[in-house]
Image (cartoon, rainbow, N blue to C red):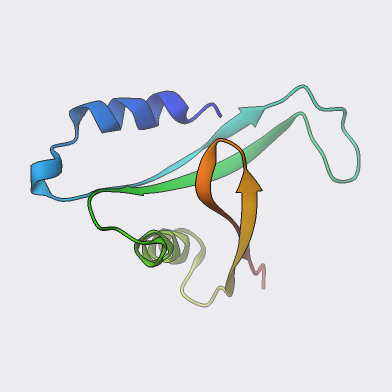
Length: 99
């Protein structure tokens, strides 16, 4: 995605002796999609990473939940859905309530 350069820079400069890297990267994405009811050639996406020794999916989920609640409010319902993306493993998609 278009956030990957930011993530690469953070990985380069992070001092892992100080602990894992926890980051959330929001950004605009452009794709060669034909616009329809479920697809757009331009949209916003947020990616999260938790990188270090002995980290788990629960660590990543906690980081994402914290970021989501800081951005969208404490009262939001959050749902994690396991998903498959060939370039990341494990992967989830996150749904956030609007009201």
